[in-house]
Length: 216
Image (tube, rainbow, N blue to C red; front, side, top):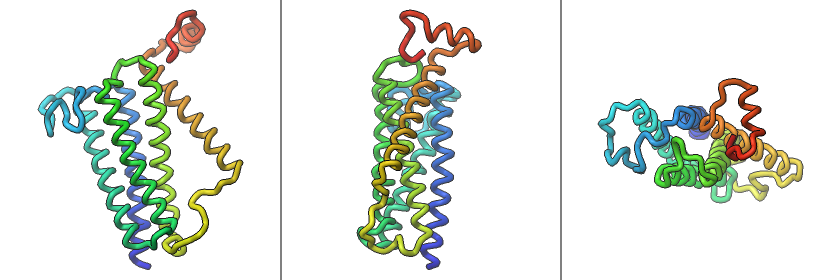
């Protein structure tokens, strides 16, 4: 029981830390620091530890370092769950989803950098990639939250025939609506970063201007 409690506390820590990393990632985009390490990944400007003192480089490198710690925490949680819980249990399923999500998160982040879909890039591919990145980030956060929720219940460590997530229509509709809202918000935020307006009126005029960029 004490082991389960320690695992629960660990997942709370992991969840809180993930929120910080995600928040810092949003700051990286908002500050235009996504290209701070150039088109290099996992190295930063071709170096393990960058020598450049540029603020954008420090911001991006800090984000990569904090993301690396997040990957390590998810890996620890994954193997810890396999030791504590039975095969087929909700705990193992949630831990597996978390591991998949963190791998996809790293690959999507690497793709943005290697394809130079950062800084002032205004392509449709960047908007699409940002959308995928946002959905997967929520998938990662939801997986960690689910693992945290189940890790408090002793029954969740046992093999259960029940599904990990409900297949209720209202649940699915709500989830899809939430994801659509999150994606539209991410694309809107990208547009505001690339095409900032001085005030509300000028922003509205630009929205309805013929030939305006689709991200405006």
